Length: 207
Image 1 (cartoon, rainbow, N blue to C red):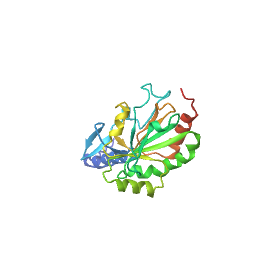
Image 2: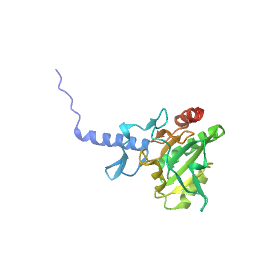
Image 3: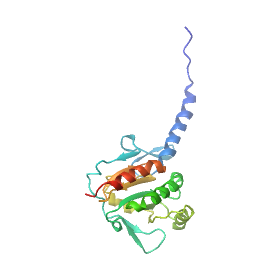
Image 4: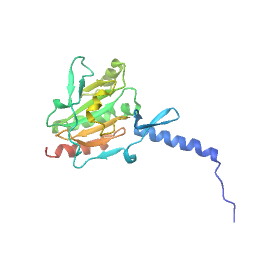
């Protein structure tokens, strides 16, 4: 019988760390109490390890609170979820400092253009960007056609009441026509991830 081959323990560590880094890169940039420290960085711990959470029917927690803030591109102008009664609202939390946000920007714009004629609106929430001009450049450079709230302190997210995870960036929430949370994505999105969900919610009859 040939002896069992042993893998040196010292080789496992770098491989494991590489896998963890890959998962962190795929899921997003995290912050806040739902993250755990790891080697000086933060990794998001989502409920049950899920990065996509669907509520069918939409969340029984009811509608979100009054979510509003200053328009990123126009100082002094306020934009709010309540500006869009009867509309499906796609909320996207983003920062220009976040690599996954840059990666998903074209996909979000694609889905916005494809669904806006079916009663769907998109609203970004720009977070943790103390330099407003850099966030504005992100919008311009990526040719983003929908508005964003400028919220470096993330105070607007209090409207979610702590019921929904918001500590990983990017996060995307899909609200139905009654502004109940129908889906949460805790990752950078492709158009094929988001568009079918948005189309399904848009096809539902308002309660």
